[in-house]
Image (cartoon, rainbow, N blue to C red; front, side, top):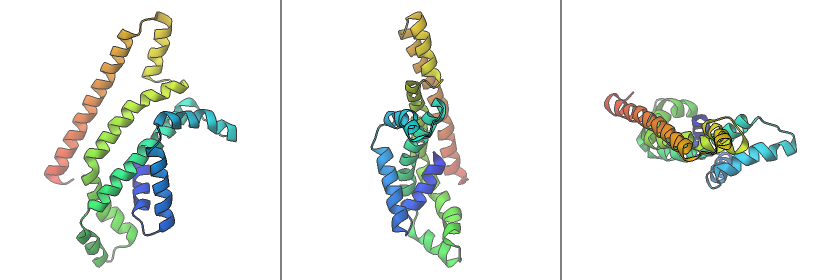
Length: 187
């Protein structure tokens, strides 16, 4: 997801009109359509053109593209928030465009974007439950199988909700401590 975001944000902010156009179209398409549609497309429609993916792989790729498209916009905004003087200083040092992006711009953009990227990561964690719709083995799918056998749903769905709540709580704590460290030490 982060790799899709970084590459897409670099393309969205590049001077190349075709690169900007492709990245914009990619981000708009994936951001403005439901992730469940992407999961169904990757699992049920791609085999029609000869691409058969296992359920877990199809679901993972669909979610990576969906959340990656959101990360593109988050990082693009972070890049645009980097002061123009930083770009000018990097040029004055004689750094190439790639070196400027990698060494000067992206670290600052990442730091600016970290809270929103953290929210995107939490959203990805919660959206993993959607891949149970195509039969992938994950916690919601396992619970659905147990429910079909035992015919008790409330207890299992409460347990799943608690499980996701604990995971999100842990991930939020890690992200908060990372943000605090970056604010304090800058690394």
